[in-house]
Picture 1 (cartoon, rainbow, N blue to C red):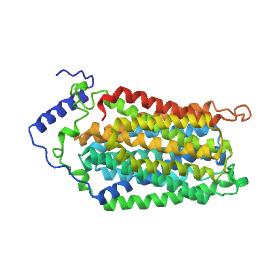
Picture 2: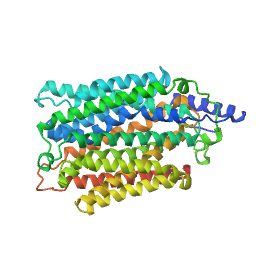
Picture 3: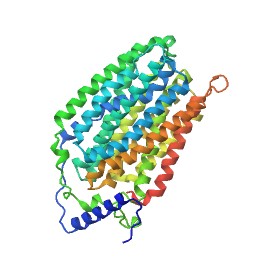
Length: 462
């Protein structure tokens, strides 16, 4: 066997992994670790705080900064890009830290504290938005928030391979995690629906007077997030994460992607499979993030159902996502990973087509929301499940793998948002459907990227 590796650290990892494989081949496989229902529920609670803040961040940050905080579109877009850049830069850092230092739950606690202290400040409704002090406060709070968010995300994702070495169980945990994410997003829009006024004349256009409503929404979400985080740490036992026997489990199943003949048993870090899997994830995240960001702006542009639609339409989208996540387990068993991701990309592309050519009626908007929700759910869960397969039994590197996979999506998403806001049409009479066209375009392009990537990696998927 001949491996071409430029980076000595990766070469060392390849050697170690191949030696471990040879050792494992001489040992009979042991029983797989089962994950109890209580552990699954406890694990699902661990990322709800992040999910609550993410739903608020992507759904309402741009519209809040522009309509309530009275920032220019380019400034609002720059702040969103700042958050994405900080998150992207800190993701690989925590990938290394979580794998090498302290326990996963310790990093989870550190990140949760940082999110708690910084997130409410972002929606604080400060006066004089153009002042230097207020801008510095926005920048510092967003920076701390995104650092904490990255710590929680990577530590929580890396717990999946540590809890079990069964690919089916890992896929189940991924689906449960995503279902909890959808449930958290639904909670955000329910709270927004309750807090925001429903009188159409007062609601269609947000303004400065709505600042206290956003503050109340954020404080409510922070309280819910803290409660779920405490329950997570109480009921998920640390010894399940730190004392996992790497020799246990069905080794042959866990190495299916790595041992594929097309890859000549190359290292799981030294192969291009990891990059292509990362692109599957990037396409899915790009789709769901940009759709989440521009769906509220599209709703406001169409002026359908008043401001109440700012809560009800995303609520329908996430409900559709939740249902799709529940059904995906059964679809995956009968069709396989490849067909599942293909189905998700086609649904996503269809959402963009319907957005552009379906008109601006209320029914069409809700149909688009359903398509966006189901497409994002299917592609996201499938991409994360494939990532767990890439990790296989090598859980000591799980955090760095997840950080590599999630790094690119945060950079790309931030750059796309700043590009869109940089060239935003400022005269509505000249471009009355700017947000509609933007939403349709990002849906089609992101899912097309996923489709092309799927074709390039299809031989490695079931």
